[in-house]
Length: 351
Ligand SMILES: C[S@@+](CC[C@H](N)C(=O)[O-])C[C@H]1O[C@@H](n2cnc3c(N)ncnc32)[C@H](O)[C@@H]1O
Image (cartoon, rainbow, N blue to C red; front, side):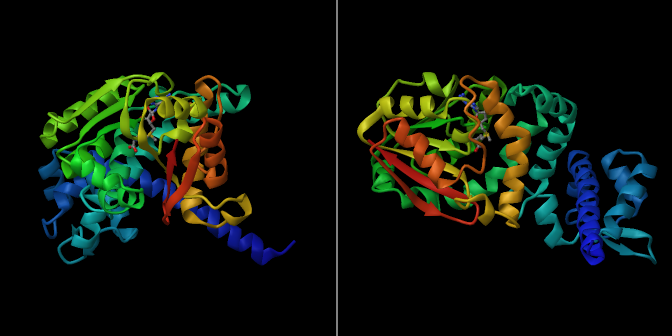
């Protein structure tokens, strides 16, 4: 046995456990408004922060001390006070930039809450539907993907497709399948006011959240949402049908893709945005993006897919080869990776 290998692996696992504890405290700081209360407020004592947030001082003091020891906040020993640096506030107290991380911690809290359910699923092979999770999952995922979509969708992903931006500018009909809280449809509606957008998701509470988000963004005249299953969605014709991080979740991705093909206008396109993944498992080893996506794939995506017939179980690390196979089986004649980024595969499929 190589003892230095034991030592370094022990350190790796200890760091992972440490990260899990801190992530939970970050989530509490987000949920309780502690980070937001600290952002832009300079140095505050635990009494001041407890007063601003209406929380119990003893808990706030321990939380602040943990945040200081971890280097998340600065500590002034003279005043016994703590400050959240502006550079950390954009990560923990603000969802509007690509640096935002609070949504991820929120989704992780939901995943931990499903631990008992997961244990049973491993034993029985049964699925776990998206709707069965704690609601933090839905808001957490939406917050987590929001900044990425804001940065990438209109600027990078749509321009990578053949002629789609021109069509959207001129006025197109677009369907967003598995739309969740509606972020992608709303962003497209803001960028392309001449087009009309429809989002569909089987999860009714997400559809309600999407409707509220569209009203808040002032685009409800051109975006609507309804509850429904991707595999039943035939009404068309659609100029563009999108699946954002959703195709691999579906129990019947081939059926959903087949329905998309049936609903597509003659020269319409299907856009499938999926997590980045090298084609072979051995080439994903050590890649932090793959680690993150595999964790959610095991805890969320595969269980959800197994909960819907025919339980395809594609997983969030399917990669281009398997995704192409799904789309080809559904009947698409042309399938191409239009763009491969650090985080995503952007696939264009046409008749
Ligand atoms: C990972 S979330 C992505 C949500 C959204 N597209 C986004 O990017 O934020 C996957 C979504 O697919 C939806 N979904 C799963 N199976 C579905 C099905 N068979 N039909 C319609 N929606 C489905 C889930 O409810 C969930 O909102």
